[in-house]
Length: 186
Image (cartoon, rainbow, N blue to C red; front, top):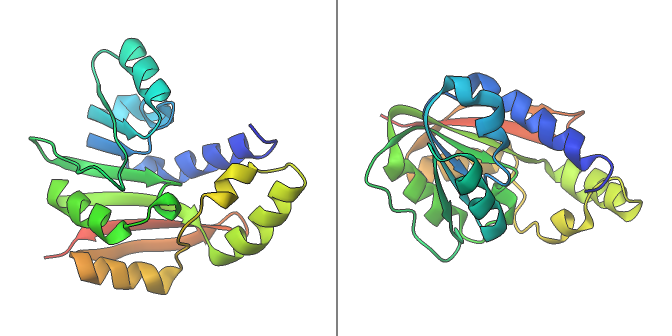
């Protein structure tokens, strides 16, 4: 892991913490940091990740939770229940069809539920992350895998299209990352 990658991950998790509660669906769960750090706030936890190695290890270490290996660009999110909170930390920028994923997320969210998102800002991705990756501060693979970079306006458009409202928006880490909370519209 690159020098600053762990720090950035911890900062994202800390920012999302106050919103993580109840029945949680964590898209892009990686090694389950959300469950580890906020398990005391979580009624039930479902983690989804592309990397099957993470999923198999998490299943072994957390038998009371549910884990699923899934490629969000190719596979549907199908669960027989709804969630209070959907967490999407540092994953939106890696998805080809965000509108499809967010439409599915809306269907899985209980009324009053929230989607908690972190993603780089255009400045953070195009300037800081690329320069930092070039000198080994950040993972090069993360920059190469970024497909769409959002700004506040794009989040508002996406939210309107799929039936969400932007409840909270702020940039953090000197404007390099953004934190967004979406709520189900009416």
